[in-house]
Image 1 (cartoon, rainbow, N blue to C red):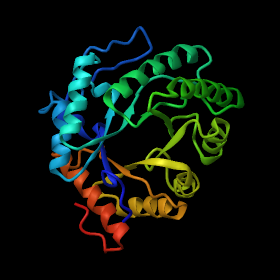
Image 2 (image 1 turned 90 degrees about the vertical axis):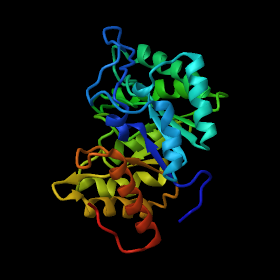
Image 3 (image 1 turned 180 degrees about the vertical axis):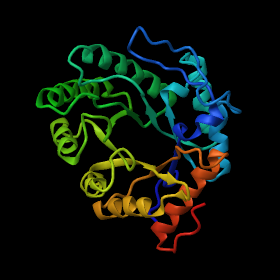
Length: 286
């Protein structure tokens, strides 16, 4: 396994919905409220405790969904950054979970709002900020609009220490054709976070083999069925990453009710990937 600073595994707070509880729907839409809601229950831990939880499990990279930040106050952001530093956890990516740079009516408003998150990401010490490339249909007009606004956003991030990345996600980017077109137009100013679970099988395997050659980071989401982790699907996704020459970190995305304790699902996926990378036979997936 390739050695990377801070290791090859990260965890996204997306995988810890039930642990963290409340979400805050920050949005450029003035009709949406950021007041806390508990769609996953009240939670049992605070976000500021997560870095130490990760370190205790031998994981030293973290990604935080914007809606899991209980406060955007400078004092809180400083405390959270200190908590990551104290646990020797690298803040890999701030995931900004709203906005649409491809929308004809609201793109300018949305990318202006996204630009405000650059300062938040920098204050937290994030290496990257993942934003949504677009949610509209992949017409030439919508793709071009997204490319223009993403270029502007990348220019805004210049000098901040935060790199903007997008993901193969939502209607704008349904296949490698659109994903590669967009990245080509962005000319390296914006990076790629490849997600293993956003496209549907069986077409997704060839798609991942195509785009993961350009990925800097990877959301290694696994599918689950009644029997547990879908090992055949996960293995094929990892094989496509290997075929593409991907050597970056894997962010463990657990999004299933299969395990009562989300950490069990997260660590199962970590073990699966470790076995795959080492060439060892896969261990039990439940």
